Length: 128
Image (cartoon, rainbow, N blue to C red):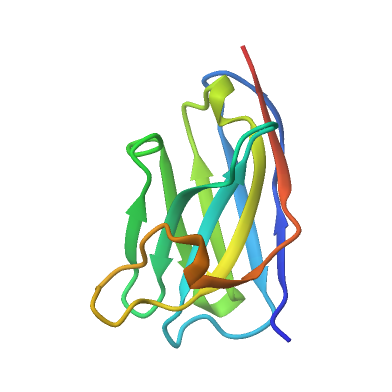
């Protein structure tokens, strides 16, 4: 069974940076969708960023474009989310997920039902 373990969350002031890591228990280089999603208190879980590991195609939610970067390290079976210029509204539990790419797309959309495996989450808190 595939396991995903997130780390790197914490508390930071607005304008600061954090890097989240997601370590997978199996290889990621063969071409899968890896994504980051988040859920703030009282809100629904939403997509943040995805990468199709086969050719590193990335996709971002509009709210994080230009601030967040998703990347992968195949040797470590790890996906990262570099978060810069953090805002209080970025405060949430961040989840890593693994899924499949729709055949008619060359990237992984932020569709939660496409992701079958989820980590336990790591908390990010941004204070103003």
